[in-house]
Image 1 (tube, one colour):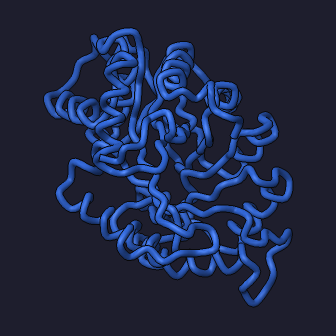
Image 2 (tube, rainbow, N blue to C red):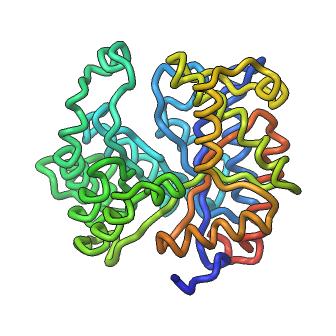
Amino acid sequence: MTGVPLTKIPVSILDRANSRSGGTEAQALSATANRARRAEELGYHRFWVAEHHSVPGIAGSAPTVLMGIIAARTERIRVGSGGVMLPNHQPLVVAEQIATLQALFPGRIDLGVGRSVGFTPAVRQALRQDKDGADRFETDLAELLEFLTGEAAITTRPYDGGATPPFVLATGQGADIAARAGLAVVVGGPAYTGRMGMPTALARYRRNFRPSRWYPEPYVIVSANVAVAATAGQARELLLPEAWALAQSRTRGEFPPLEPVESVRWGQLTGRQQKLIDESLASSIYGSPEDVAEQLARLLDATGANEFMVTGNTFDPAALADSDARLAELMGLHSRSPA
């Protein structure tokens, strides 16, 4: 038991810029920027964007570019990458992009980095990478941090001066690397705690953490798909379009644009696809505000999280906005001081 009330935990949003059936990718990017503006009004702490390449259902491929657009259209909310996939980029280029954003929007930029490489051989070839790229992550991360702090052989321009807090997306060895580097770690919530070795990895991260200029103590962000509605059934429907798209990607090899709930509900699903949808919903947090508050409290007790990251999307932007607003209300974001 952490003893920390939910209303004291910062809450952030990760938006992957999902495309929607019948819409354009430009509309998907605009919807992400609009959601960021609403998130700021609601009191969310950060707004994160991600990096996915050549995915038909996701328009978010260039996180630092999208971060600049969002930062320019908002005033206070912190804007971060969740994350830049470091194997796909030269550390100097990442440092220059982030330092440029930090110079333009001082005190508002966060850098989350991950170890993933392209999902398909064609994407990896286009990125001039291979599957072994993830093995270089710790070395590349150390180089990136040297550029950000001015400790490298050359000075990044503009000079960041270590102003940008780095985060590591913890997949596989990510938590151990974050501990050695003294960085914050981002882990998956219900799915993370449900695996036998993962709670042990989180405890090991805290035990082996080496303080850095950015973090004197371990800092854990726990992510989860979250949907809040008047009833559990309505909240479940919010999660269906993305759960369906994920099932399609795992059975047909392609993550498609989000479909309306009605199309998913009445569509023809194989047994394998239905099983994948059920698993996705089981690892999500959803329900009425009371239901979600209880589930988040359990997640907080299980992980000792310093911050929650809300992931997930749905076909109906109005329903998504309502869910974000309901979550902000139950977490007491309105009553907190501006970020």
